[in-house]
Image (cartoon, rainbow, N blue to C red; front, side):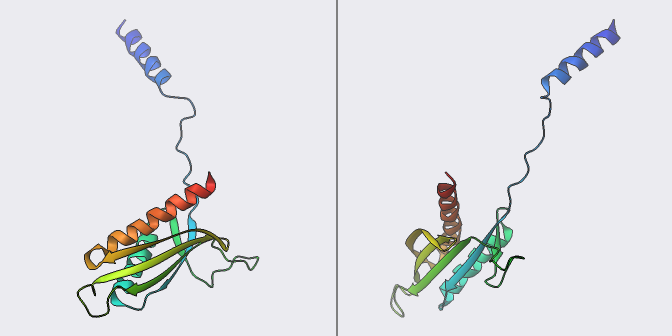
Length: 142
């Protein structure tokens, strides 16, 4: 009787597990070209932060302008263009940075925004850039 009970529990446990359960395959990595007009120290820190985030991201890979596929076309579709400048060269606001960020997909304009970043918030601005790219990519695919 005890063996019958164990067999019955085993059958019940197997019926709970869905048939064909498997993990979904990971989505393909999106190659992104990052171009930044980063002439100041703060802007260079921002560019480094964005590049580091692209390198660590499971969704994105940083592409180079020279990356070409077998057909001679670029291996990237998304481009982040950034233009930066200081708010004030030498005054009390010299630790602030103004950024203009533009996203394009296959040379078509998709989105842009401007932001002001303070010295200690540079990494937050970089994270927000990739979050905005996520939002733009998902808006395009909807």
